[in-house]
Length: 495
Image (cartoon, rainbow, N blue to C red; front, side, top):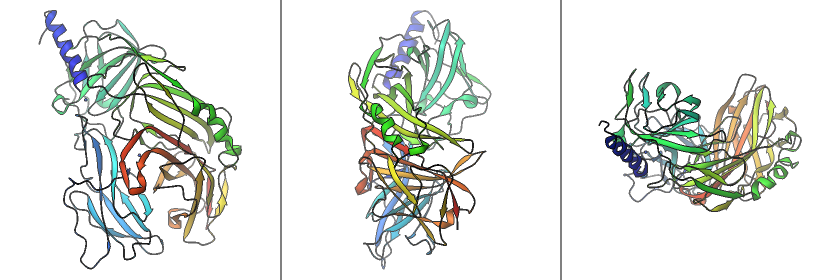
């Protein structure tokens, strides 16, 4: 990023002047510049598709490298007919046989260490993508790697020290600590915002930013460096100066948060599961790219995490903070979240709304929570929304469990995750990509994924932000980007 690199140059110039030394999957239409695809068998009817990463590179470009080890299976919707594996070419291309183009097909892919993800659709072309912020070919962070900051003119102490890295996107919270020098035990404490924790290098465009925040999480100043690389059990450093640019201000109005509680407490949504103590949180900051979906990290029992660099935690508008990411600017934005949390079998389940809205410095944006939330949820004919946890769902020896629900507002798509839930963990079993809520045509869940007597809960995330999903295009991201998450009643299956 030239803005942070400009800060690096300013910092270096300052040191020289003082006599010193020496940057949650989806579907996409095949691109015109895509690599050659797998040829369709001569005697088959079907469609060619791809499965790749969707990568935000350090220069801001987006690439589509293949996912090593990805597995793809296809077959008819009828789960009594076994799925069959299909070969995946080096560029991620694969072929789906469709003898009858009017019939929906079932596609299951497993990639990047995630649980199997299933799509039931009649799409005639698609490019399945796993969003990833930062290069796909990253090397793992070496053990014991430490990054040292020694900013000239830095504060004597930090009220709330926060360290971000860009290129490979991470954050580390250090809290109230002495200054001005700070060390980051990168491998031990940095948290990757997307993908595995990778090794940083200036040649790859990675930048490290130390930020001092006040008690409200408001960024007051920063220092940026770019170390040549990380070395195992070694401290690396680069010179810098402390930067104190004028703060910017972002403002918002709250159509969505004002309606959040009413939408959640309705009988067809949470009903008796609503705890009437919703939590509202607001963050001001920047997103990595307005061309990528920011909500890309599913959270078991909660709302999806975002790749969002928070620079203000103020409760009320306006949100003022120093912005380290200015030339070229990362998009400034507000992240607003309203959730209502309950506990079942010792695990927390947070249903609610969140939205990332782009807003320029000095401007005002309305947070509307546009995404519809799932309601009238039924599994195998049993209602599991608007009722208490512990529902018994009988499959009556059926080979499928039909899932149906609608939403209280229009949505672009939904992602349904089946979780096991118990006193020790809530863990994903399978994900389902839905182009629309299955109100008319049910989602057919293979009964074989359930174990009798096991407790389960569904996480249903409906989204507004993918305008081209009806055509299989998940690259057309738009903001504001909204999600609505519902954890309906937990249930146990009987055969």
